[in-house]
Each structure stands twice: as structure tokens, then as C-alpha cells.
Image (tube, rainbow, N blue to C red; front, side, top):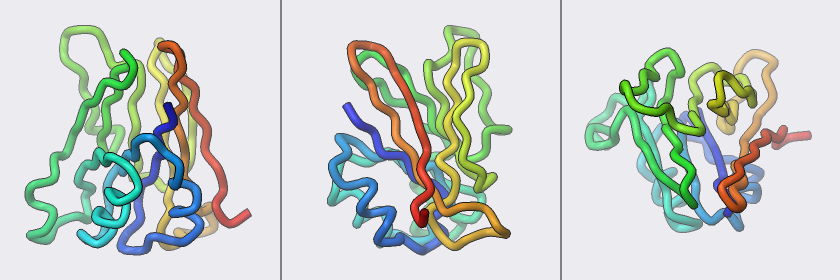
Length: 151
């Protein structure tokens, strides 16, 4: 199972991001979408899970949640735009947390939780790379990576 990860498109869905996401079994967008057309395009590729980012303030974004959870092949995934807003309940934490906001791609394991930030697939910010990511789930095991889309 391949889950394509994207965040911080800010209204720009680059052809390189679309090429990366094609073939995904699911797509997760971790917020700062920039407009409903981006969601329509992504949903045409694969089932889509999306959260609202701090810049998604227009009426079109009102129904988009700030947090989402999904379970894929027994792996619980929590999605939030800003990792600072992630608080898990008193039960077991999710296996994976996907968050954007910083525009900095990263994959880190902390206390048994895999934290993945796909970076920014939209307009370049500062000198940070334009990036996306993926989760691969096989037999309950999960791995993640990010890629520079303009390399």
C-alpha cells in the first residue's frame, strides 16, 4: 500500500507533484491547500484524506477538519497541519503522524511514532526544496521517505 503525501501547496499543484502522486493507493494532504481545485485534482488520482491548514481560511475550507485519522492495513495514521497542534488521547498513540506547516521535509521516529513532514509541494519558500513524500505499508510494517520534486 503506497500513500502519497503532500502539504503546503498554497494553490500550486506542480506537475512534478502530480507525477509523484500518480500510482498512490491513497493520498494525504497535510494542509495549506490553497483552493478546492487542488482537492478535486488529487481526489481524481486516489482516495484523499485532507486537513485544513492555517492559511485555508476561505469558505471552501470551512468543512475541512483540522485533524484526521485513518487506519490503513492496521496502521493508525494521524494527520494535522502543524505538529504543535498534535495531541493524542490517553490511549495508544498513532503509529504515524503526518504534518506539514514548516515546509521542511523530514522523517523521524520518536517514542515509537513515525513523524513525517512531506515538506512543501507548492511555491518555493526561502531556499527550501520543493518536496513530497510517501508511506509504504506492508504487512503492518510502515516506512516513509521524502523526495525533492525538482532535483
